Image (tube, rainbow, N blue to C red; front, side):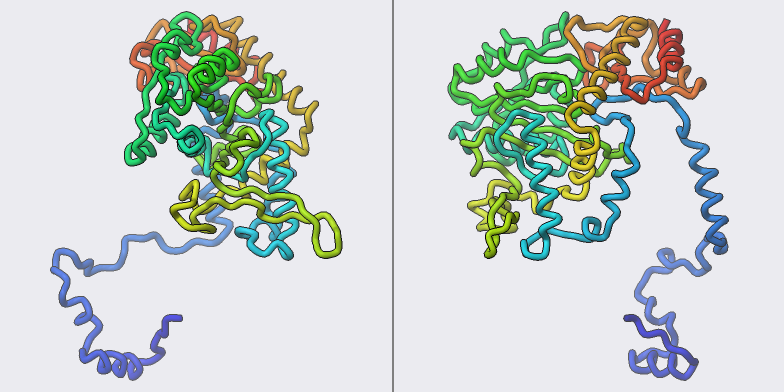
Length: 436
């Protein structure tokens, strides 16, 4: 604790002990132009209720009450109030890595349930708990495929989320892992299977696809898996919209699944934090990054949980570690666990059906650019500049879709639109009118 002198005599004693006469001499070594010889230009303090009023006023100046058609990897879904009630409990909020199982059974139980639900959703045998987010889960899955196959090349679909691909490229730079892309069909918006087949070779460790892809289009997972397996490569299935797993067939044909759980009651929060996952076939268990909680028996024969596998460098020798991610998103993953528990299988399916219905109502008013089947977002061609349309919509308290020109120059005239259960029909009608 810093000691503050209480009297002039004490201050003089402290300065004398430092061999100086005034406090100004402490800063004598600083150039005059770098010193501030006046009080800071700060407003005087205000009371708590005035602070609350201030921030309420600032919130009113933002997009509070606006309808939104933005998706592209971050989705606006309803968050049950129970989520924050659970995750705010001290037992969860203040807990860290459960090294001592005997005093962390609650945390371990929640993580175990999370892993179980992820396996049910994805059709995989094992799941970790968890990754930072979807963007880091993808390169971790790619490096896992390199360890499994002994190969060093990765093929990634161009309709995998652009930011996921950017993170993959960053990881690959010093990993000795060449990354190549394959294209998409200009009519359907799905991956170009012929281009994939041409680019596959005997050094390809993994093929990475996303479904629904960045355009919202649902991919033919089995066809991609067949092509990859024929050349001895693994198929990595990526998802960014977790709600889609409530209605789509689980990607059982994949070898590894990597994804983002933001849709499961995790607030957009200006971009994070979120929670990612990796799940895989059981035979790849020991190459799975992160950590896994397993079920066991205690000394009295009662059901108990413990960290079964922790292949992080924090737990084992660095050269043996599968990942250098030294923590996870257990508290954020807990939100997803509570969400899945509240909704259940039937509820999640109903939620996914609502998203599907809302997006297809919108597509009846606004023509999709691609013919491939889609879930809750799709690409449409604009008759004027997408940015101009979005400015027009803002005047009507509507946040429009994502202009695609930045990531796909060939789609500079297009918008990516998203509709979820939170989207109102009146707002969709207004958007359709603006696009005309």
